[in-house]
Image 1 (cartoon, rainbow, N blue to C red):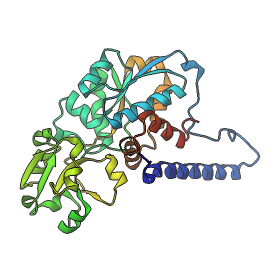
Image 2 (image 1 turned 90 degrees about the vertical axis):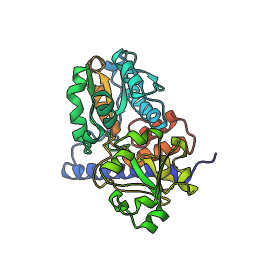
Image 3 (image 1 turned 30 degrees about the vertical axis):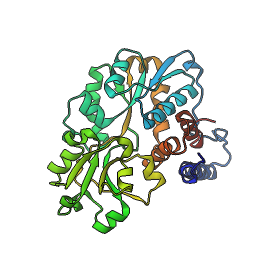
Image 4 (image 1 turned 90 degrees about the horizontal axis):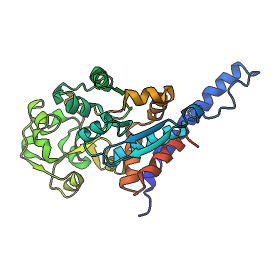
Length: 330
């Protein structure tokens, strides 16, 4: 399959802009102190340095078993390896419950998890009680993780969450841009979503209870068919994910309705590790994790997913290109 040129562009452009801003800032500093070379030899301020003190510290980085998680697991693993750690991976753990057991048993050192998933699956939050603000959702989890002997690092910029999507031409015909705009029209519209959507507050239940919407019909659909049912005209609306590859490759074709009542909870990623692994790994561990997340915006994550799902790159290759293009590794 030949590469889709759009799938290759955004990360390079953002990385170039970030580099230009860094160079400009360095230029300003140099102009005020032209006689001091200082750290001018360190041209890559974000470059992860191999710390000899980390050599011999063994880490196993895990992930759940779908594209986005594979990519994130590789990003963290490769970054930590660049910092000098001895890193193995276990990137096919299955559900969050399987991943948590692997972490608590010491089979893995850490893995990426979503704030909303952690609160609802691990700490018995009702989905409607999960904060929409990612920092609040992260803060809510800290005490509970500590009780389990775990530590969670601050969340990514992007959020991977359920969303109500439709063809842009349909959105234009209906004159809708928010979920609330569906009021008065939803009874004539068909909604498709995953089988569990019927019972979830961040899916059909929330749309009915919190937005007061009724639909002509709801049809369960396999996750891989969520866009096909829109394209074929079977569905007027479909429950999508905000980081889906299709939203990057065909950004003009699909529209995501704004969750104007904040019903769909924040799904930012936080890296969860055992406290023991974090203590043994030292300060570079958390610093590296937080550093490599800084450029994971929504569009960048969409592009990374597209590189794997559309361009058929290996997750390890997509992760390495991300780390290289933003100057984390050479």
